[in-house]
Amino acid sequence: MRVLIFIVMLLMGWNGHSNFILIPMDFETQDNHLKAYGISYWLLEKNQKVQWLLNYRGGSFLSPYSEELKRECTIRGVSFEVISDSKSEKILKTISSPSQNMEAVLLEKAPKIAVYSPQGNAPWDDAVTMVLEFAEIPYKTIYDKEVLNDELLLYDWLHLHHEDFTGQYGKFYRAYRSAPWYIEEKEEAEALALSLGYDKVSEEKLAVAKKINEYVIGGGFMFAMCSATDSFDIALSADGVDICEPMFDGDASESGYQNKIDYSKTFAFTDYVLERNPMVYEYSSIDMTEKRNIPKSKDYFTLMDYSAKWDPIPTMLCQNHTAVVKGFMGQTTAFNPTQIKSNVLIMGKNKLNDEARYIHGIKGKGFFTFYGGHDPEDYQHRVGDPKTELELHPKSPGYRLILNNILFPAAEKKKQKT
Image (cartoon, rainbow, N blue to C red; front, side, top):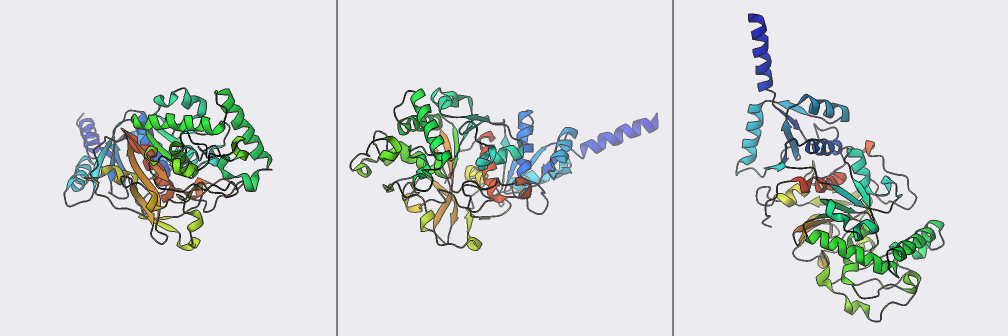
């Protein structure tokens, strides 16, 4: 009986000293940074508490100990440390110190995620859907019909697949106008617009952009990459103005349309000049792709350093195990900093070319983040290129930025000071 009591007391004592699981996010000790986000999301789905330890070992996660969590980390190949209650208290005390640029943020619930993408698109067509699949984070694919039917209200977070909201079919006309896939996609887009009651694709895409605008103003979180960033703002600013040439919408563009652009309607950009030539693979002067003169070996951008206690939002969005991230290209690679509104944060910048790569802002009650480029682990993605195998890039800092945005809506919000 005494032996049994001793064993029970020993087990109780052991449990008392192993009350938390720390998922480190530094380079040295985490084997799979990307799947670690999936573990945090999995915990939130189970209504479990998760604390995001901003700037502590690369933005680590802390959660109460359970055998189920331990097993799930092992199955997914995520590195973890079992720590005592006293050690977790020591970590949190260090983080709370005014001398440390750290903060512990409580993640409260799993955000409902929607990806705006054409039906039938393979997940590897888009970096966000690829990393969602890899991290095992659930999402729903929606497109124009669902957006126009106000189904965005069902979701907390929206990603815009690299869409062309201007109705110019990605400005692919010069290189691909005779390609079967281009012809087919154009016909499908025109048929969809007609079925939804619009005479032109540009008019239908504008209606979609305005619905997304309402969603963000009402408190939604929007994330966009590549051409979905600048084409979205351009569409909003050209509301009521025909900027499309005949090969795109069947009639001539409006005379003097540049002077009719309304920059007050945009999220991030201002004072840009639209590219009028339909043969040029570019929307406007926002994008820096054609202005770049950076060799691949030197193409990196630097993440800004914010105060975790005073500015937790941009600090969350910049969590990483490195402050320097490999650059990558896309139709919209980077943003001209002179054409970014003054109230928008530039969170990542290539200093060699003075270009913004990663920006964030507030619109009404909601938030948006724009990330330049197509695929963080495919430097110059081209039509028809093979998909990226994320199993080969489990520590990708470029993909971590996407996943920061996915967890961001789960956090208890504090007003930022910057």
